[in-house]
Image (tube, rainbow, N blue to C red; front, top):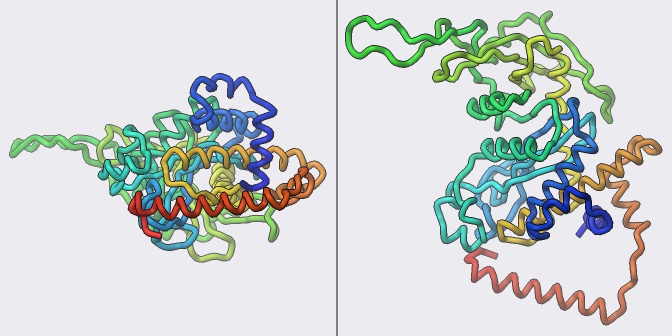
Length: 405
């Protein structure tokens, strides 16, 4: 266990909040109880109308076929399809601070269709149903609201924003969002006013609604805009200087071809200064009087969940586990989130003295400041022997679970 996790564990043993007490009847083995505590403490630290609830996925490379949810699937860190597990995560972000508050292990279709394989990985019967990544994100959004997490916007990348059903569901929950979409997203520049065509008297009467004006792709709309339509905005300070980008924005309508009415949303297009290619196309259901600069800054916050993944993997052991069971994976991630939250708290406090304080700085300080008892020769031998026994058990379990070395 990394130093950040040690600190979180010691802290949790010293201080059991009332939030934790309400879940004590579910037992320490219930990762959901710890997750609730993490979410509510994160809300006390970062929550509010200026906070953004971010969703994204992270892949952890794995060998074999026995670990819950493992499959050949896209690994963003490696930039290719590879054998890995994928978790969908939620992070609460405010300004340039973010912490992970919830996660779900993605179960590919091939797993959901194999009950025996799910049983070997201790996947509960209720979890053996296939859910898309956007469905997992939507479930975590509902959970965050149930836990009282405060946020002003939901932020997602194009992998989630490309799914109309997901955006409509977030809209129906009365949550504002800024969502990246793909370049082929269809929009209407005027209300399409969907209507069922009048019956001509021949054949079957029409039943499906049709738009009264044509739709167009967002990239085609952008191509028609003059150079002077772009507006520049400085988003925040960065390590290489101010982060600045150029933007287009307009009011658009989006219709799925089924609903009675189209939805009037905002379109935001981002291009890095000096670049020819568009970096982000975004839709938002924010009120029409919301300044476009506000939407641009919300969209830029999405960087911080990716930064949270990097810090959690390097300093809190997010990818450092050797477990195969469904519950063990979630237990590990709950402890990682607790450790990460502890580091974010220390980072926020320590910034008054060290504005550039990082997770790595904090872990280095903990490694030097926390007392450590030196092991005797016999104790060191016991540690080594235990590691060897665990390796032998892992080798034997491979044949039991049917995994490859």
